[in-house]
Image (cartoon, rainbow, N blue to C red; front, side, top):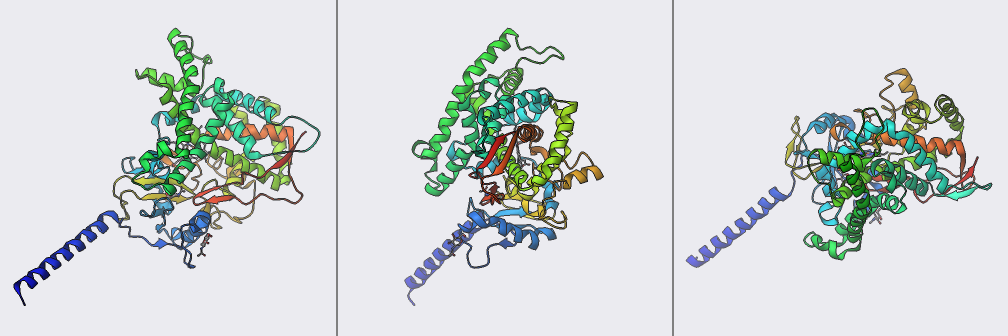
Length: 509
Ligand code: HEM
Ligand SMILES: *[C@@H]1O[C@H](CO)[C@@H](O)[C@H](O)[C@H]1NC(C)=O
Ligand SMILES: *[C@@H]1O[C@H](CO)[C@@H](O)[C@H](O)[C@H]1NC(C)=O
């Protein structure tokens, strides 16, 4: 064998080894090492499309096969094929809840899911969150009567009186009413009476989801940064942000001027002249010597609107359908409302808190038809290892199941039965503070859990009750056709919500 042949072989061998090493290295680096069972559809169709409509069925299997035995599992990540997502059993809740943001992050998860960098979407803002968590909750007692007035005005505008039954879209009326009540609390009376603002804030969540889905479907990862100039759905999001700042500008300027004159100075014990998100944010900025611009204000406001509007609308639409499906309970709910109103006609918060039956009905509606299949979504910023050794590569998304456990007969007897007083009985028999609609606990993660648990949950509970009290006492509702039932929920991967196309009929009482 000639020398050159040998050296050729050696070179070829070395080259092959180098290629193998590079491949191995890339596998080690880019392929997450997840030592978990991987759940897929095993009937021969594990296509991507399958996950659009059938994800809940797969989650059900994963719950029974793994989660119920305390075992986590991995599955396809609809949003990112290269990073399987991990679904955790509830025993990891405490650790996830306590993990620092620098390791398991909610903002980072949102950034991934909404492709925020490429869609002009709205990054999580601490100021927007504080506006809700600290200020809104602190002022809720004072705000409730004004929210009530706003709710009544919204319905009077949307549901003119008449003798006949009139078709109406629950999704449309609740989008407007909730958009308006939210605007009153977070943006102030000026914008609560501005239909452009209400439309813009109600729609922004949908716009961002469409932009994110569109960018992922139509743009290669390397070119996505350019989508903002050429891709219509992204341009829509950017235009909404710009317009929001324009609408907020005069409001902000008025508040800044008033603050300068001392006109809004809060006397101890007196009701402040301005009491809404714009004012609270402005005062927070002033206290820190920072200048609040209309653009920054728009960011905080829209971020809060994303949390505040669509999920509340979906929840309320679902409750209305359930009320139509179970008219036999309406009498008791109305009797409770009447009793509470007799003592406190204006329905201050303390009165709303006494509507235990309505509260229990809301919670049962949610138990059977959760808005969203998962909660406590987080992404690992760095590789993360749980105490028991379970390892998450950086970038891994984790979630806990919301809907599936709610139908577990071991947790809820006769789980398929709509029992409106299920949680009422729990409150009466046990801890009255635990089983109400706004409560969060280890076995109830509708509003999340831990540091990020929904700060708007007390507000939204009051809001939904105010809307329903007015509707149920002033109007009658029924389905458009005899024998109709609640339509099937709409499913899109993890998302689930009531059918927003269904119309019902109303008549003024
Ligand atoms: C039925 C309606 C609502 C549902 C189901 C809901 C649910 C949630 C959930 C699950 C979280 C994340 C918690 C976690 O991952 O641990 C959250 C966060 C948040 N929600 Fe809500 N929410 C609702 C209404 C509202 C309302 C009305 C507001 C504002 C007034 C609001 C503002 C926020 C904000 C600002 C955050 C971020 C909190 C943070 O990062 O610390 N939400 N919500
Ligand atoms: C797989 O399931 C999806 C969703 O149900 C469906 O659209 C698709 O046609 C199915 N593919 C095959 C090969 O059966
Ligand atoms: C559903 O939740 C998982 C778990 O975090 C996540 O990886 C996935 O991308 C989510 N899908 C959508 C459409 O939000």
